[in-house]
Image 1 (cartoon, rainbow, N blue to C red):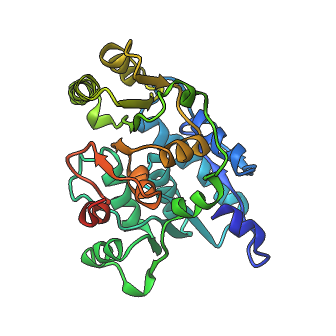
Image 2 (tube, one colour; image 1 turned 180 degrees about the vertical axis):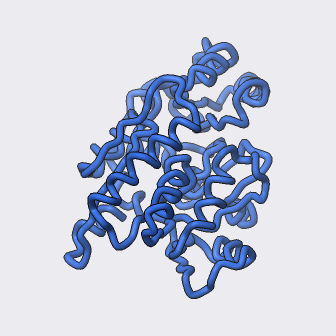
Amino acid sequence: LVLKLKKDDRFDEVTVVSAQHREMLDQVLDIFKIKPDYDFNIMHKNQTLEEITSKVMIDLSKVIKEEKPDIVLVHGDTTTSFAAALATFYQQTTLGHVEAGLRTWNKYSPYPEEMNRQMTDDLTDLYFAPTELSKKNLLKENHKADNIFVTGNTAIDALEQTVQKDYHHAVMDDITPGNKVILVTMHRRENQGEPMRRVFKVMRQVIDSHPDVEIIYPVHLSPRVQKVANEVLGGDPRIHLIEPLDVVDFHNLAKRSYFIMTDSGGVQEEAPSLGKPVLVLRDTTERPEGVKAGT
């Protein structure tokens, strides 16, 4: 979306990032050659949701006062998105929400994303919903139909720029030729601790009972995730615990995998577009379209 807006002479686009997740953000900015106009750089060790919310609100309010935009666009369901929506409302500026209308109807699953997106949509003026189902969710909440636009998904658009025919990653050298690869992502707050430990034990059982299967798991930087992953999954030659991947590496390893296990919302959308089945490691999902389609 940022790249499209920059190329369109009808718009004077200003890019603002919070750096809620510094390393992951920098990877994306580098890959897509995006230079933000404002970088709040808020990330620090053990940051809380309250700190993220307050810092983003204060910093973005200053930017809105300075730039005086006609509209502020926020994307997704992060705490940054909700805080930006609230700051935009306080400055009485038009708000557009990209990826509007996703719902699980369970306020703590996923946490805090479900309430982030619900509260963001309550503040939104223009809704850019990825699917007809997300539009229906917004209509259930009495949002105006004339303000809802079904747009598809920007993450799927990005696949056109990231998936490569001639691709190689060092971890592929450690995979026995002919073996089936399961690509795993798991990091959500509600899964950390004992739920994650149980899933990892099952993954270990899969490896023990299927000698032709290997697992690639880019382990999230969270110390809580790292600890459990290394305790349960470490030391097996067919379980490859690697550093977090940038978007290009992840998309291309996903394309070359047998199937994907994930608790990520975005991966639930990307995997079917890559022709890969998904096992969702969650009790609820705001993206039921893939489940209903049997992917």
